[in-house]
Image (cartoon, rainbow, N blue to C red; front, side):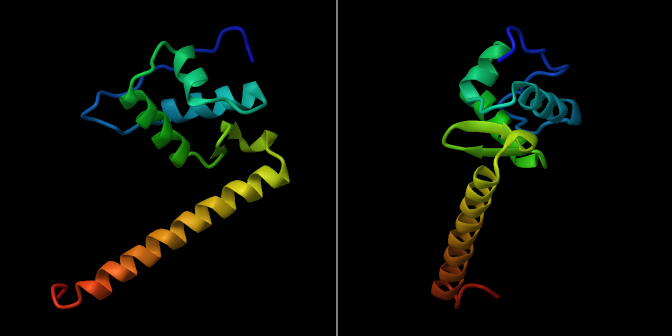
Length: 117
């Protein structure tokens, strides 16, 4: 892990705005690429002097928006440094979550069929 990570141009948005901007996304991807291994949310946020729950949500939003970041129990990792096993594990988990959400949506629709126009 580098001794000092570069502070992004913009820091986590306020609690009312849980979005992100492109510079924030580039910061996450560059930080993970430079790290070369897994980084926890605590490590990433501490490196920029932030650690609130809003900051954790901001980081999750960035990771979800990134096409180069995988996440798991160990934290976040740049795709370039991920093993095939790590990539498959992350993709399988996302697919499993998507199926659970789709199944739930179908159940809700079925159980409320008389209320949905």
